[in-house]
Image (cartoon, rainbow, N blue to C red; front, side, top):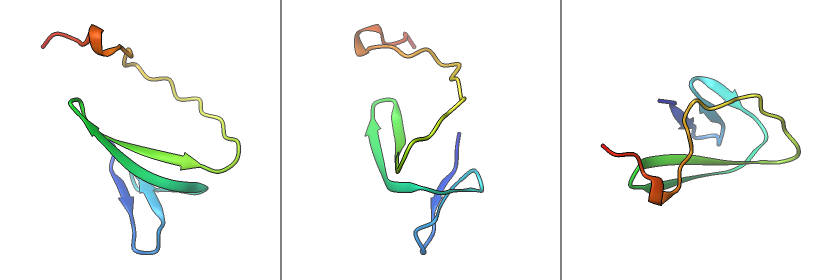
Length: 63
């Protein structure tokens, strides 16, 4: 799980690392939990690949 922290000066930290260029921060909560949504300014590139498989609501995993 990631730790997201917004300090009193408006600086955003994820797992202790300051994230720059963030225009807005919001959260969305649904039956799977809470997600933090970050909106960035400008172009950026990400090399992260998630090991989790995405699925539609009709394909929800069995518990």
